[in-house]
Length: 96
Length: 253
Figure 1 (tube, rainbow over the protein chains, first blue to last red):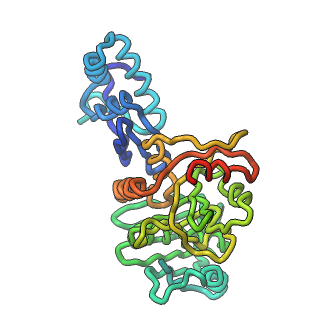
Figure 2 (cartoon, rainbow over the protein chains, first blue to last red):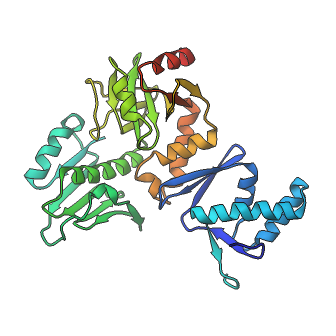
Figure 3 (cartoon, rainbow over the protein chains, first blue to last red):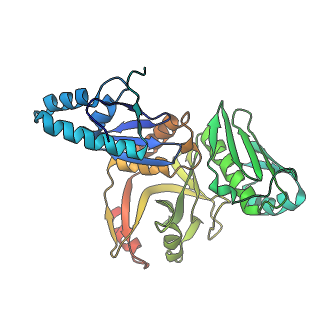
């Protein structure tokens, strides 16, 4: 279970490519891919191993003028899916 | 595109027979097979092993098999237990062929290639999406392959080539590439658009071997993006009947 204090990073080897407003994410080790829509792509590209999910949610809340609680919930839902699919990894608190 | 195949006669003989149509005067790469009785007996077919890339080398390993492909040297070697099947050896050849093709500016593509009005239609999708079914239903048309075709850039544009890895019908080896069509089994025949991102993802996912290499992936994306500037892509919802060509003709003329 993730929280807004968690920090994620793209999983090693994962490659992504913008296509229009969408983002194609490929997991070479598993031969799988998926496509993120514009907002999903924005969140994924902010997952950089340093920003917390809360900071990402705040940025999305400001950009789309949506309540912080809803942005936080949306970011957490997407982050859980990305983690489940192996596209991101959770960074241990205090690690670089 | 041609590979020189060397190894024990009992292995190379049948493979060479299957490959004779693709045998060039000056092979691009050399593939060596070696019998190794010290290896354990194979536990599962080699096609279940995924290629691993490290330090410019591609490894294809499983119990009973130790395969290495050196793209920079144009060489590949598979040591295999004597009980290895021709299917295992062909899979190693396919892996080497995919890398060789990519290094030569071409692309091995998991798709059925059907020639219609002298143009090649590449029908792609994961296993079970209907490639073999569609090829079989395309009666009276030449089939370059029901599973794996080679895309290569010719003088007039991208071309689809037959490969030695799957069933073909007719003697045709190559035709200009008309369209890329993602197959979806459905109760009706209908062409539907595919978003550029989904198309790109599907096409990369349908590029065997190369899509497992993080180093080559950016180049693979770029190659598909180049192809997509010249060749249309869409999805075909089709039923198990020989009526989908009417839908394709209505759309493409």
